[in-house]
Image 1 (cartoon, rainbow, N blue to C red):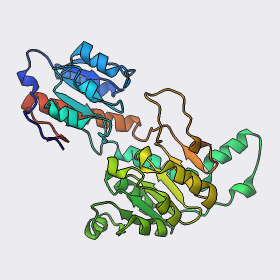
Image 2: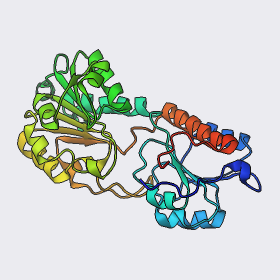
Image 3: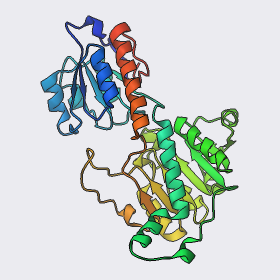
Image 4: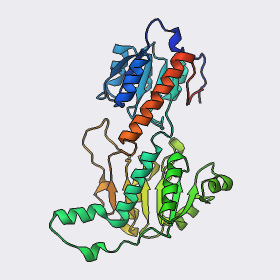
Length: 336
């Protein structure tokens, strides 16, 4: 991580009110609270990777708030006034942190505020895979009654749930799994047996061991290049035939070609909220061949996008901006 050469300024050093550009949707409560701090707030949720640099150049914000919109070096260099970037969420993979650090720009995130929402969706996908809910709905809409075909679910009670990434989302998924009567095991890069026991999870020293033991796997691994293709052909081959795999973290965590082959040849069922080739922005065409596989169901990267989660994230964004504005302190700063 590149260290700051010179700490960025706080709002108390600015000539006038802090200018805040919000380039993704943010809960109205957050926008109102930012204005209540005296900030000049500009909100354009339609901005994209292609248009953000121009918007930053034209508006000259002190603070840039982004959700999923990428913040490249070009964006960071677009205005000399920019002092802080706040990610309204956990992952900062889409922000060029090195470029921000070179300019002495703080980068902060809002970890854990949407963990419950993401865990809820993970469980929606698990249940939908186990009971084949999308296929059942499609049959009913086609005027078909297929009770015999769809009465084949194994069920979840007493089976084994493997958590890949026992962070805040993983902990929430594990807690719900125990409520279903499942045995929960976990693996993370820095996980210890003692830490796993703190969260009432069995400890797996290797990913392959977790794959061999699990009937259901939920992926909530953190971002970073070292997580790309973490779920690879070897891991998928170690899973039990017919196992369920759910991913609510990042599309790049799974080797897409290997997953396609596993779905076709080993009867794996997959529930995916994240994809390797997601469109830029909130609308667009989508053509991932994986979603055409009968054993795959999916959602539109909406794990964190409940009203409850968005209000919680907005509250944390405001707290970060307030701390910077009033004390020059940046909570959750990832590059200092």
